[in-house]
Amino acid sequence: MNTIIGAIFPVSMEHSNRIFKQSEVAFVKYSKFRKLERNLKIIFYVSKEKILSGEGTIEKIETLDPEIAWVRFGNKIFLNRDEFNHYAEKSPIRGAKRKMSKITVYLLKNLKKYSGRKKFTNGITPAGRYVSKNEYTAILHL
Image (cartoon, rainbow, N blue to C red):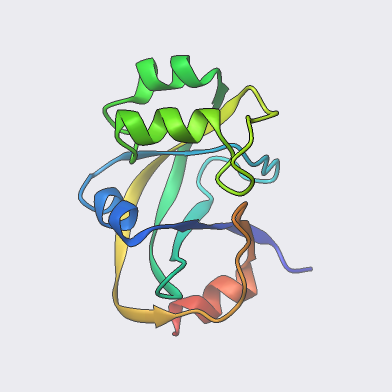
């Protein structure tokens, strides 16, 4: 059986750069990834470049009202306040009002920016996807 060790989520290069300037970051997402838990990995995929930029280890997961998430984690969230508000209100895919009312906050530690360009040609949806142990091992050898 191939164990889930985390997930890959798409981000812009600007957001990737912000994430790896901090020692601890709060990554926010509306997608529900029920298999993610403490000590699993989140890997960041820069969509336009088709590269993996780095990873972090999940310290804590909370599902909250967006305003509460901002109050609790605003200084650690990788988005600025305007970007966060826009993300909280509208779907980046359809531009329509969000149906989900709660946002998931992944507090990450042990952030590690990958050296070099880890080209990744496997598709990543805007929602992200799980990563298996075998796939993670392959990623580390890119």
